[in-house]
Amino acid sequence: MIGVGLVGYGYWGPNLARNFAAQPDCVLAAICEKNPVRAELARRHFPAARVSAEVQPLLADPSIQAMLIAVPVSAHFELARQALEAGKDVLVEKPLTASVAEARELIKLAERRGRLLAVDHTFLFTGAVQKIKQLVASDALGKIIYIDSVRINLGLFQHDVNVIYDLAPHDLAIVSHLVGVEPLSVQAVGKSHGGDSLESIAYVHLEFPDDLIAHFHFNWLAPVKIRRTVIGGTRQMIVYDDMEPSEKVKVYDKGVVITQGDIDSIYKVIVDYRTGDMVAPKLSPHEALAAEARHFLDCVRTRSQPLADGRAGLRVVRLLEAAQASLRGQGRRVMLESA
Image 1: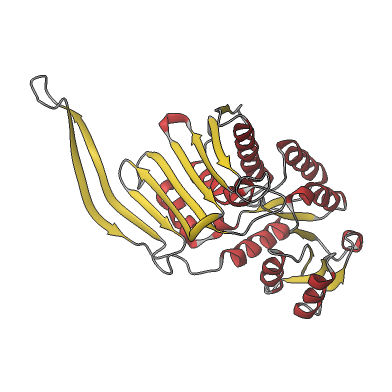
Image 2 (image 1 turned 90 degrees about the vertical axis):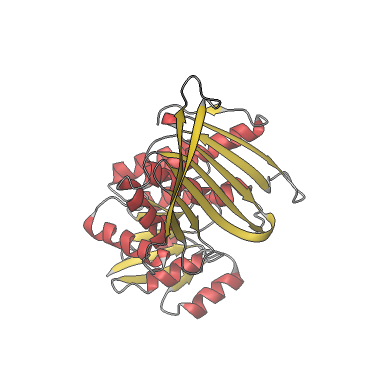
């Protein structure tokens, strides 16, 4: 049995607690929550777990092998650092840290201590993203030429981070996982309409090698909730709609074939439209967070590297930091050095 401690029982902590407590080889041993109301809820929902207002009892408990951190991003680094120093494996809620420097320091510390460092990029464990990854890896789409994504809803306004830090980690993690190459540049524009300086609407644009571009729309002020990504390939195209109850992934055998006409042709460029079938592949119905919990516990047991490890978290934080720099520079293009 693997003993697990949870820090934070706010918005996301209960989901982590529920999924890890449900694993047959895991014991949710303790929960740290400073808010008395939330702490009482934790006691009620998980009576077998010790609930503390301080993290030190969890760090000092030798029966706790892994720590789950679900607190505001500003506290991620210090809590993860303490847990790693205490010899615990660590899973941190997205994003991994507030800065690239902090992420790199945690990665080095985990390596020195021989501990696992993972980040909660839950969408990588969905049946939809796993199926898309299979299609990309099999070259079914051909060369990917663009990715267009929309992640918008009404609320939830955050008090400590803007809409990019709140929503973008999901899509940036998915794209990084699917594409497997680092972008060359990042541009971002946004505006604040929430009564403070934090952007509530933003657009982020990435450019990759080989002419691949990716564009993202993030918004807390939309009248509807949309979670949709379009992936365009030279052979096939995908529409991934996470709000669909059943057919979340649709593969379209559509495209265009552009050829040069002869010199006497009226049109020097000839466009042929290719229209084929649409297929909605069968997806695994498992809960993503449950799959992620199983995966993390397996990694703790076998000492294997998590799918969303510290370096995967660093890649996302690197893009977030670049997007912030672009925002402050009125949308200027920020070139990325090799990771």
